[in-house]
Length: 263
Length: 89
Image (cartoon, rainbow over all chains, first blue to last red; front, side, top):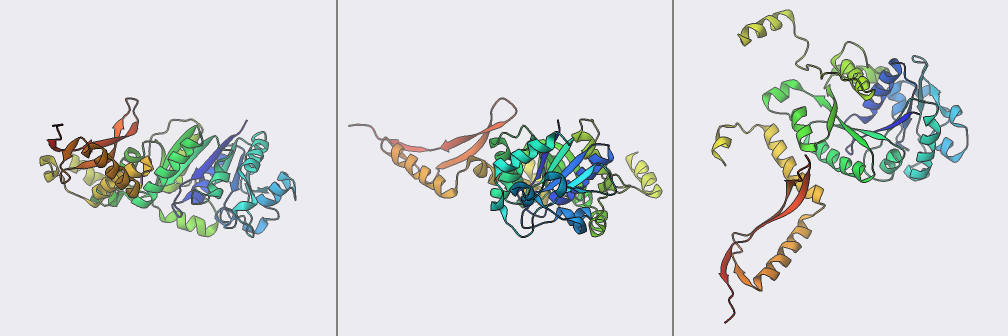
């Protein structure tokens, strides 16, 4: 039986779609059968981040309305044979789908896949309710900013109220240099405020922009963000992985000088 | 400001943390400033029937109290200084 995970945040632009793409791809790299569902109806995004925008024939609303079978709408990722995408509809809006229908869709996909990842739209309205309807657990993405953390707190409350069993936090776009200066809240600060379990810290990394430009998730590569995302995937699968040292890849000189500083 | 705070540099991340903690208390309680104000006025009205209170020193707010289970629960905190008991004569 597969697990349904919703990736949500409340505030827009904190990295839900990037997280969905990378975590989904990472789980597929770890030999899991994964389907990504873009539930942001009307504002289709996950397909371009995944680099699969040219292959869409049917979409989520087509499946819900019975215009096609689920299998026809699923786009198979060429790079990973066990990774699929169900894109959202571009010409409809959130009211085209209701939570009951989403629940039913999740149940049908459970038999076929190990992980079903729902990319949730921003906000707390119908789109959010649709995305969380069939979910077993949630990944709440936030950045270390007051607006994002406040919205994340609201979302965590709503997830609890909707009896989502497990909620984990991803602190995204952390800048260690600013944290050290005292000009950015640390992941510990955010965890203390929100009081939920942390599952990942993703540093602010230029490689993310490049990977999104190219439509190729960077999970698992040598970049700090790539490593952070792969660690999140392993933690989702139940492994205990220590958090990355985000102080950066130090050059030899820096490493030496830091050793001398300590003494 | 406490003695310890004096030495703690007030960085912008500390400011953010403190502001967030405050705003989340009222967010979590689902209590808007207007409702808070109404509740405050009603409490004053009731208590004023029995005692004369010092409106200047009045402090009524919603805080988070530990629930003994690693979580917190909202609590209504009221500090109402009494000027004089309205004794029945």
